[in-house]
Image 1 (cartoon, rainbow, N blue to C red):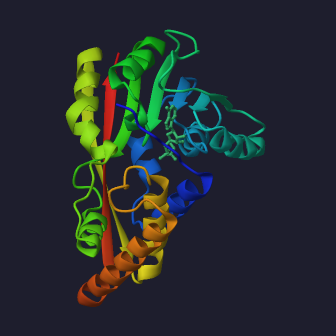
Image 2: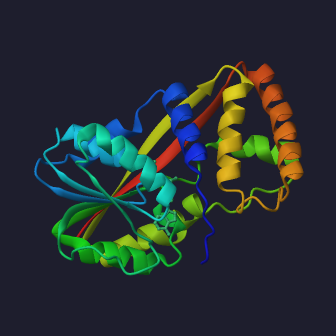
Length: 266
Ligand SMILES: C[S@@+](CC[C@H](N)C(=O)[O-])C[C@H]1O[C@@H](n2cnc3c(N)ncnc32)[C@H](O)[C@@H]1O
């Protein structure tokens, strides 16, 4: 499966900000609670983007941890490296493409995390096998991704505004169809956790900031709805009108993020 992914630092930062401003729960606190990390461990964070989870792990363990953050995007890695200066470059950030053999030590890491990213891999069994290879026996792989009921309101509004079906989203569709099954095949034990976070918007504006960042980040997935910049803007105008209607009807826009956390033990 060829996935054309193009995350811009700007789109990712906008969505992270909207989650922290309008959400009622903190996903990193949930992640740290279910992982119950012990000091002194070695972590590899795959698809680390600008380093959100790497910095969470680091602060949670008061720096008593060895962390390598990896990503295919040099611009996101540069952003992570800039923040890394605040902690004396304690974390290593390096290039890694899910679709190539991982150039990292084998049987080495206690935890590999891959948050909101594994579904961009072209060949899931290959990428999960590479992760399995790098873990110590008893080491854990932690992946997160959207569940099929994720942000129902967002999809309802887009469907009504455009009159078109929502194209399949690799995150939710690939977890159900392939990712969890492959984790079960490769690892000795797997468990699932669910995180729900309602984002409550009292006006249309932040919902549109989120929608623009999300649909422009994943623009290749949405090409049945728009292709040119003009078409993108027409779709945004229609979405804004429908969102306004929902807001007047319901008093607020509540978009609930429903995220799965999957832990597999080698
Ligand atoms: C939604 S972002 C998540 C970033 C970070 N884990 C977070 O939650 O903030 C998805 C990440 O997957 C990375 N990615 C996409 N395709 C990849 C690939 N083939 N190999 C490695 N990383 C990839 C992107 O560059 C981006 O940083």
